[in-house]
Length: 491
Ligand code: TNX
Image (cartoon, rainbow, N blue to C red):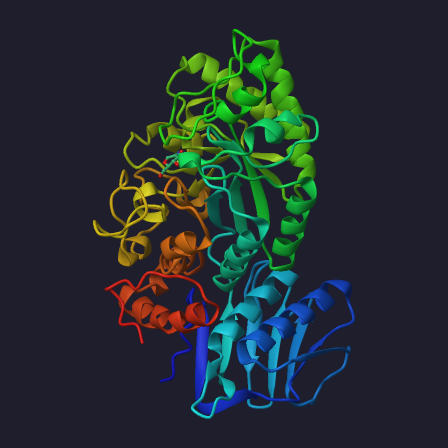
């Protein structure tokens, strides 16, 4: 039977052998004349046009029944055949017509990603997709990728490529680690010195950079059209040397700290007893919350090695209160689980080396869990000992390691229903540009995406391995650097 090669594997997929939809000169995307859908139609036509090298037109019409050579995209309120959930979609590929149906624009984005993956080029150069019916919906609502733009800066254009790749694998949260010891990457209008004084540096003396609120808004919009929410992270109360360098009032002697371009962690900190600290947290989190459309702001909270626990807990509470006062919900790294948390706080698991008891306890007390285990989902870990870039503190992560794990049972004693999702992470101590970044992401990002999307009973390594092999064509065509894992028979 023909395999469509779709990653992540859909909930249901029936392929009809022999028949196919062929993209031709007359192929048109048809959407209802609704503003949301118009953006989707344009996006679909643009993507299909770029895949096939043939311009595809968009038409607005609320009636295209019976029309041929049409890719019809519809949002419906009620459709008994759609699977449950906001993001569900149905994609029916027939010889004369493609029909995508969803309850939301996010659902349609997923249908489009599946269609794009199903397209292949025949010997005569034409592009077609096998006739098929796909009924699909995600397992987890939060399917993320965290990118560290603080250790090395990535321009907005590079992040847009990452967003495109995420949409292709149906990931829906782009978490940006915007601040760290080595640089501050988002201009905060109420605290202009953060970017004025602390954005020019990166790890190893490399050049820095920052996003203006306009740049950031542009990215948020670009991601939103592709079904992706941006979650900004301002890491406190550790990892703050860029802040204490810009604002000396945040240190007990009032003297700004020196620029830092090394890769040690855990030395920088805020001070709960300084009046400037509370004002700083309020100013920064209020402005950052105002710049994001999403529901969440990430407060960091990781690796504070130079502070008594009590002071740490006070600072986490202040940051969380500032986020909530600005109308957003709080996300923080695993360590915040050691402090009292409001129910509903999202706690992100990462450190596979330490006792997970506080994390498990937080879940039982009402926290939501986001799973980013360092030994599976940290895509800055080397593939093997010969990988040029990357770190090794959580071990080596080959493609199969990133694939073969189950988020709800990885940590013993977790209440499975507290897990809201899975997030891959890539830290950039050794990663200086987009080529380096995609060579760490691909193919592993596809594996983590399937862990996040597909039901565990349907996931199978041998099957994944044969599907992902079909993806290198597209990576090559769009010029992305990737790692040819020896675990896959690439074409
Ligand atoms: C741990 S993960 C960190 C980061 C490093 C990363 C390198 C986390 C919350 N903290 O500061 O960049 O390891 O893999």
